[in-house]
Length: 147
Image (cartoon, rainbow, N blue to C red; front, side):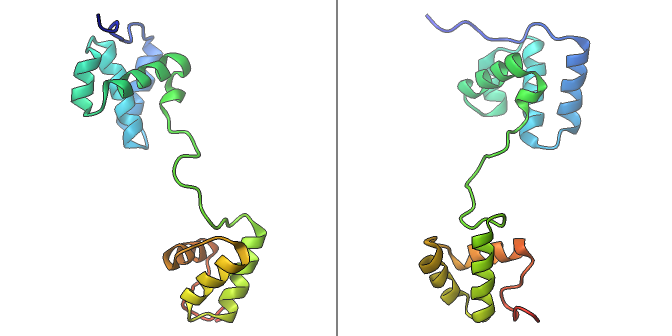
């Protein structure tokens, strides 16, 4: 005995319009796919067919459909806070000041700076992470601090 087939049965004209707009003009490809999925479900496509069409699991399709039912189009948008959190934060004064001071003392040797960051802040960072942090601060790691 399987699960009951899940489908979006009722959509107002306004909802259809916003989904079509999201499918056509949405910023993220994932958001566009989710809007497309809801529209296809509304015209009668079963979850298994949607799963193979989009190349994702049945669980993910059901999750999208549940998000639509609970939150509407806002539920289909990506939420903030996804991904790995930064090791060094530009909004943390201690990190900014420490890195600026260390770069001023060792502008040509970022490997030494990464070791000093680990000693002073207790945060292990790679040379590449340090360069990315400096780029976010608009400081060039290869030039002298007051150029």
